[in-house]
Image (cartoon, rainbow, N blue to C red; front, side, top):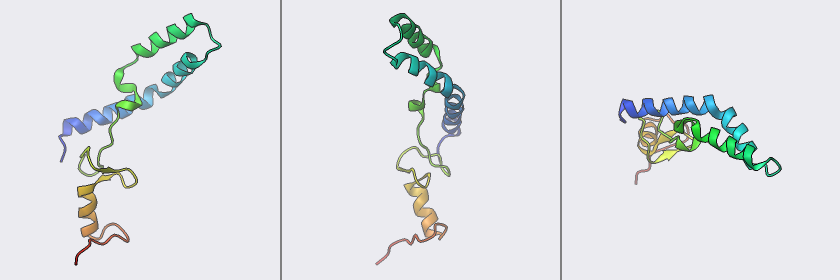
Amino acid sequence: MAKKSMIAREVKRQKLVAQYAERRAALKEIINDQSKPMEERFRASLKLAKLPRNSSATRLHNRCQLTGRPHAYYRKLKVSRIALRELGSNGQIPGMVKSSW
């Protein structure tokens, strides 16, 4: 189980990303528009830099929904490999059977 503080930090980042998504997209559109004057694009890049760091989507990290584990994460199922094995062994995932021979 991951530390509760790490899970809380990730939830906080998710909220910030959602809150600032529109502003970031608008500023990036201005920055990437070659037809706009250089000064306006530079001002937009300064505004983008003043936004909180944690509002960037690249700062998010996938975590297991059950344990909070950040590594060996299956995106489709939103759980880690360890949680997946436990759920499969308990018969809680349809069609999944633990191999044995």
